[in-house]
Amino acid sequence: MKLYKRKDRLLLFGAMILGGLSAALSAFISILLQRIIDAASSKDMNAFLNLIAFTLLYLTVLGIIGYLEAYCTKLIIKNVTKHLRADIFTGVMNQAPSEYTSRNTADYLSALINDIKMVEENHLVPLMLSSQMIIMFLTTLGILFYLSPIVTAILFFFLILMFLVPSLLGRHMQKRQDACSEKLSEFTAKAKDFLNGYEVIRSYSMLPYILRKYAQSNEETADKKFAADKLLAANECISDLLSILSVIAIVFTSSYLMLTGNITIGTLMALIQLSSTFVAPVVMLMQNVPKITGIKPVLERLEGLSSTHASSPGGIISPCNPLSDPPRFHRDLICTNLTFGYSSDRPVLKNLQIQIEAHGKYALLGESGCGKSTFIKLLTGYTTAFDGDILYDGISIKNLSQEHLNRLTAVIHQNVFLFDTDIYENICLGETFTRQQLDQAVQESGISQFLTTLDHGLHTQVGENGRNLSGGQRQRIAVARALIRRTPILVIDEGTSAVDLKTAHEIEKNLLSQKTLTILTITHHLDESLIQYYDHVFHLENGCVG
Ligand SMILES: Nc1ncnc2c1ncn2[C@@H]1O[C@H](COP(=O)(O)OP(=O)(O)OP(=O)(O)O)[C@@H](O)[C@H]1O
Image 1 (spheres, helix red, strand yellow):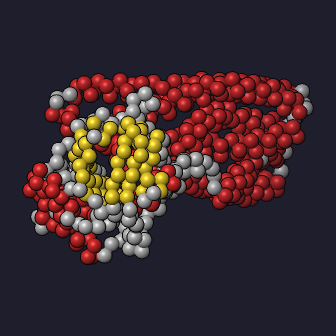
Image 2 (cartoon, protein in one colour):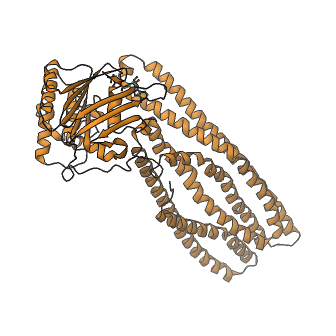
Image 3 (cartoon, protein in one colour):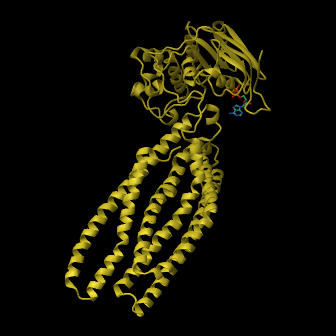
């Protein structure tokens, strides 16, 4: 994962130059101060008036450079966070299904929101500030040395002390930032779970229990954040103390130098002013370096999720064009000795042998938990980590891209997911279909039966995960979504279970009567009146087909 794209690196360079320029110019205020005081103490009116004009010019230039630098900084933050969000989202969505489901979705949300915020606050901003502070420090050092080498030597002593502190705290800071990011991710998962469970929480009066659990998670998250902040606070306190100490030492030393006639009052004032501009960058660096080093584990985690790292068997899945690119399936789908388990010690499917002829109608029957959905997952490319083989027209699934598989097989799931948009978009899913294709899918899926009751027809909003529709209506959208793509193989995984018996019967009968469609229906029990339409019924028991 590249944190900065080429354009951003140029911008970063520009911002650093401008920041450095602005910092260097700020340091020169001490020289200006020295000249003004010396002109006043020597009663030189001419020099005094010139200095007023110069100061006005100096402030204008400082203001313009300061604004440009701030503008570039904000632009970099915008660009980097935007492309990080894009990279991570693309990476997550391109993971193989088995990899995607191995993590909680809240982990992904936390990476996209919390971790990117952490990168902004603990990497981008401190990095920009640090580079600016380094230039400010070097310029101040040069001026200081020019004014008084003794004072510079004293400041150097404090400087070494100041640099020692962040290097001692850096590793602890890393651990605490990492722990904080993990806790935030856990907290997001819990909050998401509880919010999704709103209805169960209400109907089972479990709010006090949930509030207790939430409070515990909230407290643990706050504690982890506080643990990281405590270390930062200690770091800030030590650096502040050292900076005050160094200013005091400078005031005494330069006053002594003035008492002994070694420097003018203007130089004394300039040295005092410089001591604070010398210390300020060091303090800033002390406070920011641990943040930059501490964010490393978070960056590594984001790297693991980003699109440049994520592995996908078929690469990035691009949408296919249903009109120009018709899929082909003309012989059979064969599973030979198919064995798979989510853990190596507990196989769900054992030496499964199944042959499905093109255009045939098949049913797979089995009790709950016997592995029916797992079988469908394997057919549709969930993972290739199984024994045996799955052959589409003689080609192993391991040699087919995910995109190709998607064009061969459509699944109507029992639990339908709907996007929070209208019915039309939930059917077309971003692809373009003709009016005729859309009408046909709406008709065959049974959507037409309830469409007239909706004010906005196909453009009715379905709400979050389709909450404005009934379970049966949601399932009919899922049927239309699968049908409109005209994939040669259609898998119905209890896909009409939420529809009333009459409608389910009609939809299934209609699908089974389509001659060119290969159908595999997965169910606990089959509608007796439809058995005649099936070429074969498989019985799945203990992971084997009987
Ligand atoms: N992601 C997963 N990780 C671990 N085990 C899983 C996972 N998904 C399913 N299982 C287990 O695999 C077995 C088969 O589950 P599967 O969902 O395939 O059954 P099913 O026949 O479709 O059940 P149902 O008819 O109730 O939907 C079950 O014992 C289940 O606990």
